[in-house]
Length: 408
Image 1 (spheres, helix red, strand yellow):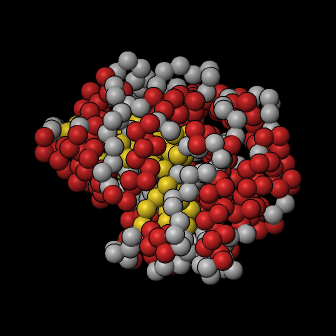
Image 2: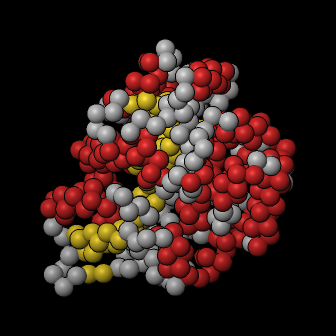
Image 3: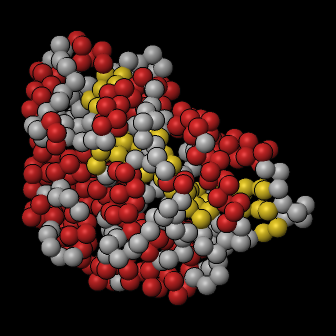
């Protein structure tokens, strides 16, 4: 991608000898692990303590600041990079890998057993000019439709498998006086689960690459997606533009709505409010062709090491430790995440509705993970939901994407 490649050149020039390499007074090797997720700090701390107990010559300093990706970009410019990264498979990974500062794990046994779908995702993120695999996928997440099982049973409905099934369920719920979909559009980012569910399936393969090359546009390829989004808005509720994530979780937990568009990460929050709630999840059936409907899933956490770290062996030891079955299982259980390993399926009963999607590899990536950083697509999606002008929305997406490319 042109914009990524250009950033890479700048970043490479700025990055001279970074990495916070330290030898503690007690002789221990100190490594900084920079994470862009705050919600898993507790789990990391427990696993780090276990690692340090087994490796008394290594100390891991976890750093998971607010607004982590902005800070990481600042540290890149200031030549102050950490030894290791625990970040998502998104634009920040693409930027760093294109900057040429990450270790190449091609051929490393740590990649053995990882589902091809996730390796392909991070390879696509790196762009066609880049060779190698510069991160080790560890945990995955998924974009789901969460549903109230009790209400579905009361309405004599089955879990929808096609778009027509889904619309029929919405019509049935609405006729019965239920809220078919409990949308939460007060926060811009909470508009993204439904956008990703629809556009992730309907957009052309390699959309981001082709868009960057000028081979296609949003206006040409996303008309069906915007049409279906507008259809779904008819089944929301009167206050959907005034309800945020936390309030939405609580409302759904208290019985508001049949369906709820959110990622798997919302399930623990809903169950915190109502531990007895009988809920399930499924992949949004965006089309009437069963084989075309896929679960939108992405790399939630990957590990990578900076090339300039003075302690690559110790960093590799930590990543290998995290990939071991005991640590991996604990992380997935505590974070309601999914393993990226072939054949390792979640036994979480709440996730049984997407188990087959993982088993069969019926997965596609989050489309917004491939959008240029700084595009602010979530704000544009939120505005589209409110104004409902599809042509303006798609043209603006094209315009903003192109303008960001021109900056680089």
